[in-house]
Image (tube, rainbow, N blue to C red; front, side, top):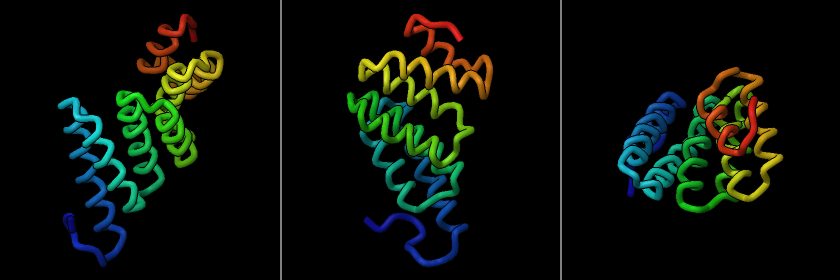
Amino acid sequence: RGGPGGGGGGGGGKDAASAVLKEQGNKLVKEGDYEGASRAYSAALVLQPSPSGAAALHSNRALCRLKLGDAEGSLGDSDACLAADPSFVRGYERRGDALAALGRREEARAALRAGLELQPGHAGCTASLKGLGGKG
């Protein structure tokens, strides 16, 4: 228990601690430990990072949840990601992938197309859309 920083202090300490936890999560994803990564991202979110930081953490946790077979949890994180930062294109990719896993293909296509409207040619949205048999 008791992680780095020990509590107290201003937002700067929280942002730094959140960034450390995010990096730990990223490392665990690369190692294929999606459960551990999800826990790291959850701990980082408790620190209430900035909206863009929260968007990235929700997006990363959405990936982990999808890899762990929790498409509903992934969709919830994708929606939280986009609520925190509607311009975070990877959130549309995650939302599309979660919806596809739930068998909601038309909604998935719509989410992926929305991401491509914000960033034409986004590799992740493009690949996911092709996987659904649709073009941008």
